[in-house]
Image (cartoon, rainbow, N blue to C red; front, side, top):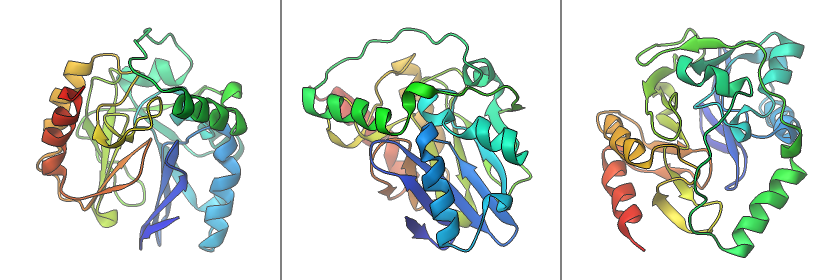
Length: 239
């Protein structure tokens, strides 16, 4: 799905990943589920590109529904995969803290797990090698993505700011579609390690110039990053 001249999405509102497209090549932001590999190939073909044009994968964090096809792309194409140092072990399949599922509705929860099965989420292939990054790093990749630490959902959760795409990719720092309740709109994401810390981290988005705020789950949100933190806090306060 084309969102802009330099910006494409693969997947859907349940699980999504993104492509930053420039003349120099393609940067992939998050890698969804293993079955999104075919979506990646199809989307690249639709814009006259191939896997050879992919220069790097940047993960917003190391959870399984964001690692997806990253290891396959690294192994088969030699594409480096970048992740914050605090989530490197997680991206390699290390232990993840148990978190409360919180509220859920049968329909949306069932739909999430069925979609994950369809996209081979039960066959997670974790990374064997990563390039560790830190808050403030600007990566030598198409679009010059900048890493912004947003700890809370996980210790190494980050946002990725790409000015040429007018976008900030936020992973699970927030969601616009709760995968367990189906509730739409800006709100806290489920399965978050430290919910209070995650909310505090959103203040770091306020000064970014972007017209797209793009979560790993939910519809792309168009608006100012400066408005995000208050909206997510207000949604989290509602029953």
